[in-house]
Length: 197
Image (cartoon, rainbow, N blue to C red):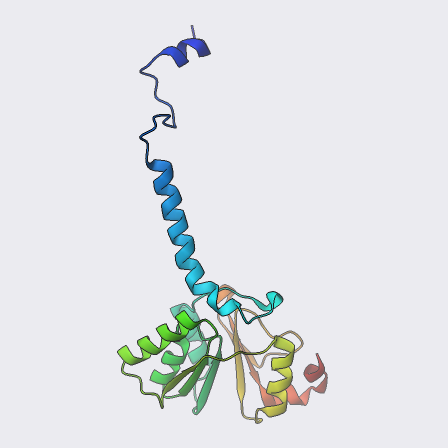
C-alpha cells in the first residue's frame, strides 16, 4: 500500500529535489555564475552596439577554423589588400596576413578591437601586414552601393554566413554556418540589375 502525502511529508528521512534549509548556497551560486557569464558576454557584445542602429545589431560570432579556411580558399591565386568589416578578434585578418595579404580589420567593439591588436602583436604580425581600425561600417544596402561605385573590376567581395541579397555569387565554398560567398565585381557589373537590388 502506498503512503499518503501526509505520511511522506512528516517523514524526516524523505529527501526532496530542493533543500528548504536556510544555509543552502546552491541558488546563490547558480545566480552568481549566471550573472558572471552574462556580464562577460555583455562586455564583448554591448560596447560595439552603442553606435549601431538597432536593426543592424549583430552579436560577435567568431569565425571558426573551417570558415577562415574557406575564405582563404576563395582568395587562392590572389594578392594585395584584404578588408574585413566587423573583424571581431581579427582572426580572419591575421590568417590573410599569414597568407601574404595586407589586411585591415574594422571593428566597433573596443574590447574586440584591442584583443585583435594584442593577438597581432603576439603573433609577430607587423602593422604593414595587419591593421585594425575602430570605425563604423555601413548598412548592407549602402555598403553594396559603395562597393559597386568604388571597387575595381578585379576586386572580389567575400561574405560569411549571409549572402548579399540581389547579387549572384561568382563562387561559394563550404556549407551551413561555414559557407562563404565570393562576388567578383566584374561579374556583378555585367548584370546591372544586381547593382540596383
